[in-house]
Image (cartoon, rainbow, N blue to C red; front, side, top):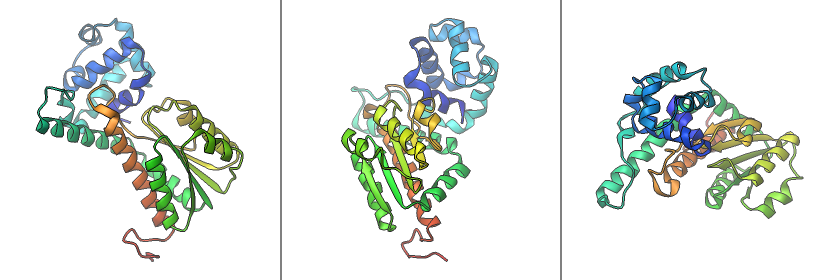
Length: 269
């Protein structure tokens, strides 16, 4: 995963000092990859150890390893990173430009972070299951996914509240798949659902912005739905876009593995 994607994925859990470093790097990617550790610390208004701790938290051996990763991912990040936060002073046209720009950035980051082989393996696994459970914070998205699986003649059930999750938590089997999504990764009910499904032998797939949460470490397949990571976009709409895109990709691939055509015919052979 590109360095900037890792920063965005971990952003919500970073301590204050490390978050300042993250903000500086995300706002100044071209400058940051050319600066030494002391310069980044000074620019971010933190101590040198804070920069080192961020690098190690993201999985790098140290600052030099981190800086190399920043430079390597610079080409893929695009000009959209230069966008400033959405402001009340912006014109309507500027708000549109910024929101579209951040959505594009989020989708690009999600694409670059996606392990295609693992994603296809997850879809193939789901395609062979008898039941699919959709577990998430958005009932609208969950029910839309349920409808798509029903159209493939697959039994699918949406679990979006504490009561329904509790009811099915003891009913998972090895013939089930659980697809869960949560932006922050901090929803305990969703984590408990993944734990229960995993223990029953069900296949578990998890979509989230944060790779460091327990659910991401526990599930069979984890995929990052990238988000911008700071208060630049209202309502976290760019994360919704990347989560919807990943769910659409997953459903499409499941249909293909079940012998269906994306054009709607029953068999693509």
